[in-house]
Length: 517
Length: 71
Image (tube, each protein chain N blue to C red):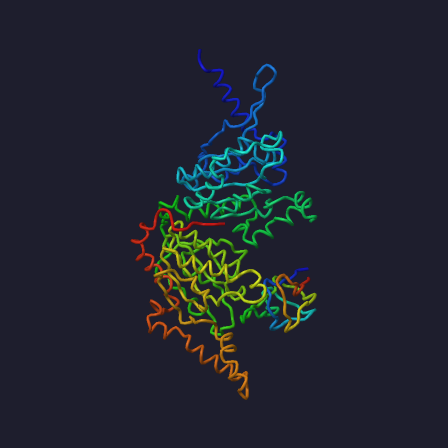
């Protein structure tokens, strides 16, 4: 007696599982410009690299005689695979089955994704399209029993994954409830503008509870969620989302116990772009293009911006310097003067947490006028979010190089410098407790009011004080490591990065703090 | 019709076009003053200024419609 009958049934079940939710459900998915989860995984991974975990999980159907007539696979597909030759864990809901709302086996597989990634110390990619539980329970036939009291906390593995391995997630269709909570618990998240919505609760639940009638896109489309920081990036469609995730992973180490991979670099370390000499206007009211400085200083085309749509006064992203991954943080003076807003502070804090978790050196290009002010800023608790960013910087252990490009003022500026960081200043650098324009009007109010021509006296005082904020006295007092020709920024930073190499291996392993969404 | 909307609040420092003016893509339409910085807004495409909804000195808000360009 051989095991041929059972072996054939294994094969049958596998074939039936690959049919997912059936031809009609797959056709419907495609007609709405969305791929199935298996197609998404295939797009993400290197060819033929998928090693599925739990393909036999699901619910069989038998006829009256006990013959297998159908098999509903677990509606979460999970496994290992390779991206650019490096192994990862990948998983995603199967929307063609139960609209992605978890089946019992689907739920087990979905919560296993983080555990696998932590156990094997592999980056995790989640490709989300699905919703949370249903009042019918995961079995669909009445409320499900709760787990026993000693069940491990479900979200502990989600938090541990964030502290251990790179986690990147995409929203590719409607994502609600539990999958939405996991989507945002990522180091990098991206949503498809064409096909995705992210919903704490969908339109029907919202209308019932709030009386608010909104479409899925109005509630949670990309216009809402790329602007509020729910996700880092928006990309045109599914393919573009997957390309962004592959790009993100290329900068990252496999886990916190490894350093980020170094690529060979054809961009000369001593490249000195001429435009850096004139990019900052002498007129202090005129803005400049910080992203052009980033392009001139970092390796050509290496800047991968994260969170461009929100907290826009701060620019954050990954880049390479002489082939090595660094975190880049800069101010954008074209947006609210580059000031530290509540959402900009949260974005910066999360970004520093990412760099600290994965031992990525930070390059900080500083043009910080201070915390955003005004009634809206007060309503948003700017000072508390800003202080969180400042204290996060103070607790980092990764190497920092900060380049004072223009302004560096107030408490907020402290967030842009790491402990024992390397500090360079351009000739355009100004620093102090607050910018002269605001400070003079307050500190010299009586003197200005008493002057025969108050406006002229105010301008005179502003000029006198502005001269004191010049970087020369600061350099004379060793307040910066050096005052440099802006064209020398790239070679200076490449030399700094070379010098800090011996410090990096000792930073590996768990950090004092990790990333919180 | 192309709508030029404000990315942030601030005050209108200089208004450089009037309704009916022809504009080329990249021409500065107006300059906002935000946190003591000048923030120029440029024409996203060539055409004619169909309507101007702001005036110099106005205190303006994020997402406010500033200018419409037709043609």
